[in-house]
Image (cartoon, rainbow, N blue to C red; front, top):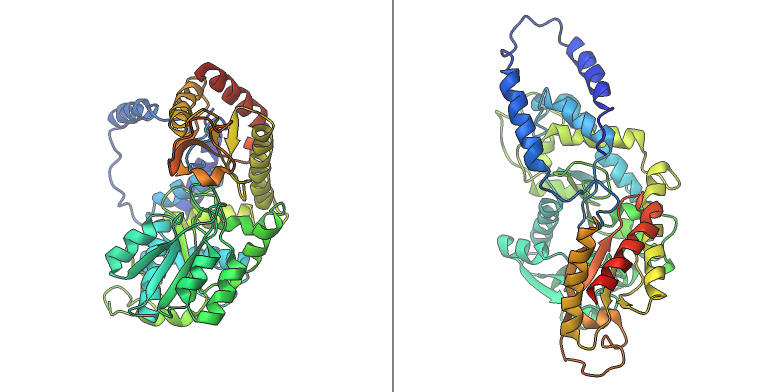
Length: 452
């Protein structure tokens, strides 16, 4: 099940890397106790079996996507040197590769002039974006939808910025009417547009948000941590396509290569349309930046030490799978969305479920029909457990009942007044999910029959 054949490629690459240092005198550390190392690695492998099979198509629960083999190999290869991309003298090659990889991501959004770098993940990337927002608009409020990632509220607390959550419409997107009314007060600094919520994959109406920004003078930050790569997808709905087509007009963008970008965890990216925001990062560290007059990545980042291995892995992946519409990488995204549409259609034809809004990306959310909302919530958990016994791993989530439309109680008898319902959530983010939908539906159907 796990890729092992590619390890021979790693050995070949290591030999080539080693050849570049043959002029050095002997000075390597003594080899470890291989017997002891082997014993510990086997123990670790045993412990790691206590995991869901995140790599398998029957895992369709949380946002966990295996790295591409080239990313794993490039990351491992770089670990033999372990460069630090904080300063050029700590990672010359990997720093250059980070700049190249980040520039390709920026070009994907239509940017040629920008400021950007990799981070340890989407949370830190969003922290930097909101930190800049606070520097540019001191004292003003940050707005995001109630379905935006919870870290925006928490980050604003850390940065001591004012934050408000705006209600969502029935498609889990920021309510434009409420946003407009709130913007009329004139104290909004930045609005976060979520380009793919983590709960439902909903995409905020960016064209309308941008129109409001022109009228009321606030900045726009696109949190595209989950959905950003879908800018390359050719099978989006018209309104979703229109939103992604406007992303280049945002003031800042965050994307997570360790989600749809096929990278190991620990790889986020923040981009600013105005390179001039680099002035807020300026600091003095002569003992760190002495080796070159060229800009060091640590001079445009809040983080200090950052793994060069993450940059090399991303660079290698994008060399193999360029970020272009119609390319192999884009086709993988289209396959994931196709899988979500297929599953949504099957659910819609089945009388046992209510389904949330049509998927905008590759996330499908459903709730089993029951006489009462509380019973539907309990049934969701029973189906979740029954599916897991069949090696189908979904997720559960508590979402507003209004996202599902109609009457969750079926015929309406005995409906409870509850704001939320526990539902089943399927994240079909692996391209191979397209070929596994029929099996996923079969197992889900069996689990449902067992649970009712």
